[in-house]
Image (tube, rainbow, N blue to C red; front, top):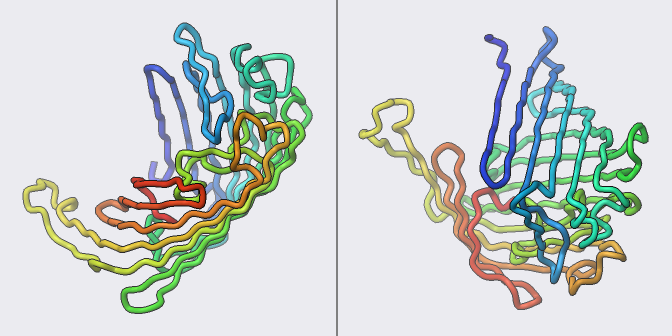
Length: 324
């Protein structure tokens, strides 16, 4: 409608089902500082995580029903005083239902005797982004702070915990072809009324010590430091693909970097989750390695890394996002 609004729908059918509607209004005032967003999704899974054994997730599967169901609704208000800084305040409602077997296998899955729960949540996030290139930054800095309260006491009290998360990264140039980057991630949360299905401390998404990609660690506090030195093997090259019919898509660029890195992390694990052969909670983690980073068309990043850690683990890993 000429207002830069976004209306999106995402649907996945088949073994695990996912449906999401999102409506974003970037500006609701003439000063173009305040925004509004609505988000609704429903998820049904035939297979879902149920516990952690030997620092890896185990799953429960049932073909004839859905052991995991979630309905989620969210209203978010945003305030953007300038290009680089965004404040967001969101109110959420979540409704979950689980198969009874999940609670039998893992009594900490919900911390309750029943298999359904629903609760309100409140989140505030500050994001300050001064990076030169979001998908693969070489200069600038980035800061993100988030405070979340899951469970406001108006519905079920099975879920009632707070969580504070922070991320800071700095990027700068050492020489004509040499770059350095470092980041710190931290998280603290309340252990009581913090069920397993909502705990994703380290090893989930892109939040891990490199060389521990196959592992997950649950806990109520963590720290993660990442660092890497990048050397430009091939500076940004631009060329034209004449066989592409649309002119605006013919121009392609790429750059190649050699990446040497070292990461360190620690997770304060829950006392009742430190069984099942899990050795990584409450243990200092360290990983190092070397890799090649290819940055190319439409903000695409391809990383091939060889890494190893103090537990004689690691290997060759493939990633599609910037390391820091």
